[in-house]
Image (cartoon, rainbow over all chains, first blue to last red; front, side):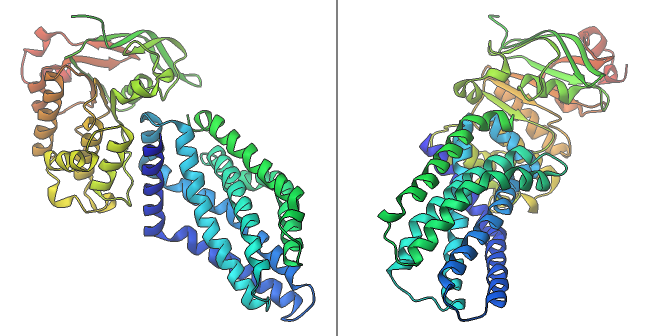
Length: 222
Length: 232
């Protein structure tokens, strides 16, 4: 199973590196969101930590849906998804590999958004920013898990993109509330332990959709 | 002769209200090759899709290696090679990367070497590092055939394997299929009317798919002339 997982992740990473489309789309979108927020709130102010946290999360949410769609696009090419269904690979492994690649791309995108936020919002480089990393990682894993699940459900629909957004928006709300509140607290100086409750919500959300994906993927692709 | 590896009984497939296959009966034993001929839209691809579990029948039973194909275990899937109308190859991976990926997924030992050996066997050595979207349609078809036969499956299901192949390609494909048959694999192939006589070399049991049913083409009928039976 691990060998299959490795082979599928390698394949998706090669495809992503060759096209670079997913990563480029994430970075462009993040930059656009940050610039809009910067114009709206100006280059200086007392609540920049909150804006930066919000910007990173907005960028992550907006990038999760296209990221999942793009990651699945390769499987529609030449009916490759049928090749995977007919091969002796556990569908849960296919799901886990897809989610991992989407999460990796989103993590790279989130890190670049964070770096751009530091520059654009004049944030002080300190340990506070480093503390954001676990929160963002938990967020990207959950968003990737849910995005891959919903992306597979809607990939063959004519209005797949619309359905993806309609289904995804309400399901993202708990993660957004937990993720944004934890990020703001951390940027305002709270310790990681003090943000325990929202982090637990994020972890539970990741486990819920990760498990759902592993259990349901077989039915979704067949 | 043993037990049939492919057994279809009273199979009917409908798409909505449209009947595609109706009460089809079919059996195939190890080492046999079945060639299903029929006009475009006659249901050949649907039949292959049903045998590999991608299409759900309205009624009847399908057993491949003794199991309903929709309920195949991982080990049973490993014993079946499938080639469908589309190549199931990633267009932005090279020929070598594609075969190597599938070799790993099918648990083939020494995947890198085996993939390269198959690329050589289908005459694509010089194209091993080309991406699939850079290959011609015929080259892609050769690679798809290699993909289906890579793990030396016991049952091989091929939908239009000779489409887009030139004369050399058809000859090569027939040699590979004959080799698979000789090692005991059961093969189901489909082809539209007017296929190459090279196929005769693999001595297939021929079935014509018309009026939603499979009709065996008698050997007597086939002896009337080279491939004239196909036109009857």
